[in-house]
Structure formats: structure tokens, C-alpha cells
Amino acid sequence: MNARNLEKVSADVERMFREFNIESIDKIRNRLPQNKFLEMGWLIAHRDFDKLLDLYNNGKKFAVVSGRGPSGPIHLGHLYLFQVVKFLQDTYKAEVFIPLSDDEKFVFNKLRDFNEGRYWALDNARIILSLGFDEKRTHIYISSEQKWVYKYALLFSRKLTINTVKSAFGINDSSNVGIPFYAAVQIAHILQPTIDFNLPVVVPIGLDQDVYMRLSRDVSDRLGLMKPASLYVRFVKGLTGEPMSSSIPETAIYVNDSDDDIRRKIMNAFTGGQPSIEEHRRFGGMPEKCVVFEWLKAFVFSTSKEAEKHAELCRNGELVCGFDCKNLLARHIIRLVHEIRKNADKIDLDRYMM
Image: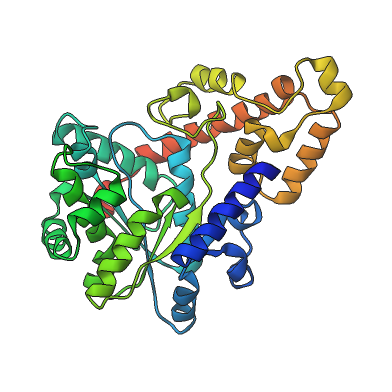
């Protein structure tokens, strides 16, 4: 992460800590096992995860909730968050609940109908599960097909006001009524493990999604339930330097991309290299500004030591973006995508579906 991004993340965390009781991950770093997400700076903050660790150390299990809105194919940015979820399951033997929120995509006009939602839900589920989740501790479901979702959403809707939801979603009176009601549905996803199984919950999210956690915590407080905790994950930057977006395919690598498309997207990615090879050899590159280097940290390198060695070779001009770094990333991403597809084809969804 470059210095400017570090300052922005630090400022965001500090502001949200002051306003919403969020803390830097450094506050609990010594309580977490050594892992890539912590070492590489992908885990940046938390709220109340220390309380779940206290409970865990006293023999109390907890659940992880992380959903996916199925309206199209999955890209590697989506999967990175689920790698964090899998790390939590592996480390703490946590129960994992994965809502496939076709209802969200429907009310926000991202789906034509529920048949399309079901198609993408099942497709996305196989891709997510290809990461190797424990089938005995993983519970995945299509939200619109669960009766309890509606029942709990009704319960929670009585604890929300229209003004609160309008502010949270940034909507106005011209929005369809399904959008404000979806706030109650999302809270149902988050609090269901606590209500049904007496399991405290942690939700890995981005800082920009915290407003939904605050709604869930307010409702849980009013109902006398344990408030859900959160872990804040820094998302991988898109290949063009913009955030990854399903509406801008060039920003991301999708699991269904061809080898040629993967290589083309990576070869066009934003880098921290010099304008010419001669200048790069002379002055060196700037890995702190390089999206390719960030992707190498996310998907290729295993340790910060390995990443820093690569960064130093870049700064010295010994590595060239187009010849070395991009080719290295393309080879690994193509191999990774092939492995994900192969594993996904073997998934028996009935073993995981609620």
C-alpha cells in the first residue's frame, strides 16, 4: 500500500473509530495468529472482535456471516473476501453462513427475475465453495427461498424507521419500497445464527459497508441480542487503478474469463513503471503505486518478505513490468482460475445448502 493510501486508510479508521467505535487491527494484532491477511495489510480494523476472541478462549464458538449478491459471474475481488472467511473458519473452527442475496439484486433492479437470480446463486455458490470450506461447518442458502428470512425481516422491520433506512441506503421517496425493506432482510442474514443457534457473529466487510453493520447492531441492541462484530478488509484495487466493478469488466479478472482475456487485462493493467524500458532500468519502478504489484501481493506472494524482495528488485530496475511482473501475475492467475473451475465442478451443493 503506498503512503497516500496508508494515510487515507488510517484517517478513515481513526474517523470511524471516533464516531462508531471501530479500532485499528493493531489493537488486537498480538491476539491473532500469524497470517497473510494481517501481514500484508489486508485486515485493517475491527469492531468487537476482541469480545468474540474472549468468548472463544472460554470455549464459546462463533459464526462468520458473509454474503454474495448473485447477479453475474464472480471475479477474484469477490473471492478474496471469502478467502478471509475461510481463514476464520480454519483458524477458529467457526460456523460459516453464506446468504446468496438474490432478493437484494432483485429490488435494486440487477436481475430480470428470480430464475436468473437462482442461476447465478448456484453458479456463485460453487465458485465460493471451491476454496475448500468445511462442509460440516458451512451453511449456504438462497435468501428468497428461506421462509425464516421473511419472518425475521418482519420482526426487525419494527425496529427500523424509514428515515434511518433512507439515510443508510442513500435513497429518496422515489425508490421502490423493496429497497428500504431489504435493510431488514440483510439484518436477518446477520443475526440469524445468533437467534437460531446462540452463536455470536462476526462479519468481514469493507469500511464503506459499515452503515449496514450499525443498523444490525442497533436492532440487536433493541432486541437484547449480542451485537455482531466486524472485521474490516481492504479490498484489492482494480487492474485499471479504479475499484473493481462488475460494470467495468476491465477492472477485474472473472472466474469465467478465457486465458487470452486474463492475459490481455493484465497486460493492460496500471503499473508503477517508467515510460520506457531504458528509463525503468535507470530509475527503477514504484511498486507502491503499481496495481500489478498489489495483485501479486494478494494472489501470488505468501509473505511480506517475499513481496518486499520483489519490490526491491523493481525499485532497482532489475524487473520490468511488461516482461517480468505482468507475465508472472498472468501465469499465476490463469493457473488459479483453472484450479477454481476444476474444484467448483466437483462441488455437491446439497452438502452445503440450508
